[in-house]
Image (cartoon, rainbow, N blue to C red):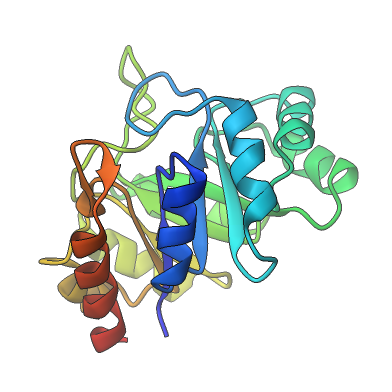
Length: 217
């Protein structure tokens, strides 16, 4: 079965709704240079505390230094870190040594063919990849939450070459997620705006999205 991560969770109520409908992971967005879903760290900690152990609590962080990321995880007490920006190779080692048992996900923003090699290189350091549609090279970095679809053919190539799980993100919704799964064959899918209405998790959209994923898996 394709795993489902519901991102931009903003409250305990939203987290419970996502979990009740079959989410295997929830995304909690900390401070970002742009994009939706940012909530205070105090609320991230509150939400992470009520999530059952079988569900991944994933902190989306834009921080890039070891000390900052380690301190943030210890404040938020999540079981998974999603690194939304590029980090130096030694950061992975520092995180492994300082945060045993905490899973690492590296985001790779698919902007062209070079992204394939970037993803495969990163896959040697982390537990999973997440392929999104941001752009770190813009004056105001886009590290996710753009609502844009990228070139799924490049994502499919990464999935073929990767030895670790790959999540697909970027503009997914109930109308395109089945096609995305057929083309890319990801380990999991990640959705934010595609299941929200007026910045709130929409139960109807959530149910339809999950139904489409489960029918295709």
